[in-house]
Length: 266
Image (cartoon, rainbow, N blue to C red; front, side):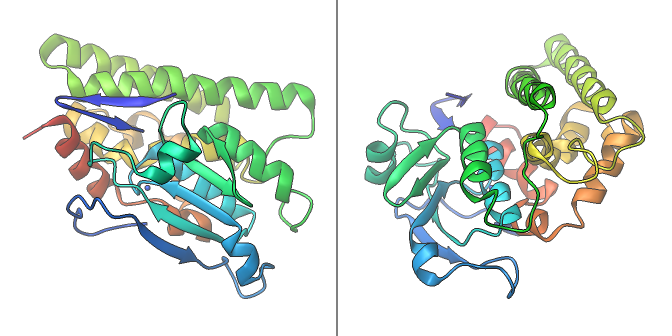
């Protein structure tokens, strides 16, 4: 389980708001339409798929990106992670960790962001015209999973230290974060459009939510991704042209604002 530790509050590790909403103990349920009028899926199908998440949760953005890419109609249930007590729905569907994101398909839960992405790819991969997110080649699948795990362990860890440390430790975290970003840029390379090659794939979905923090990296830690990792910045701009990405990813300004709230940064 990935959890975000902040002073006096534990938040499990996003719909766009121009103003950060106040904590709401009541879950807000929204039916999310298909990406286009040509997408398949009835209202009944939408009711059978539910995604429980919080709007600024980078890990949960993965699940919603995968659903959008596969054009799967789903209901979105907002679980406000600023409220200390998890909802009865989350406790029931993920009793092991009481964490989001959770995908509920026909009443059965799937937990863990990367697990959800793989599940969506397997269940709906052959029912849409969209290519599979995971590569067909076993070696390439293993490679994509390795780097997705690297994001969870290394990139997210350095991001957390950047926002929770001060002075020399903060500078060290910023340098470490930049090193991880450069490694990911090297994996992307200069010749392919996406980490998945010519099409957006599993690793793109795993990394892309963290691009919402690039603004915060620069503002808080002086890590300028556009200047230091130009190929990575171009990849982000390329992805931003996709409807799925516009539907799911919040602005960097909003993400930085709520993370300052999480970490008590003035």
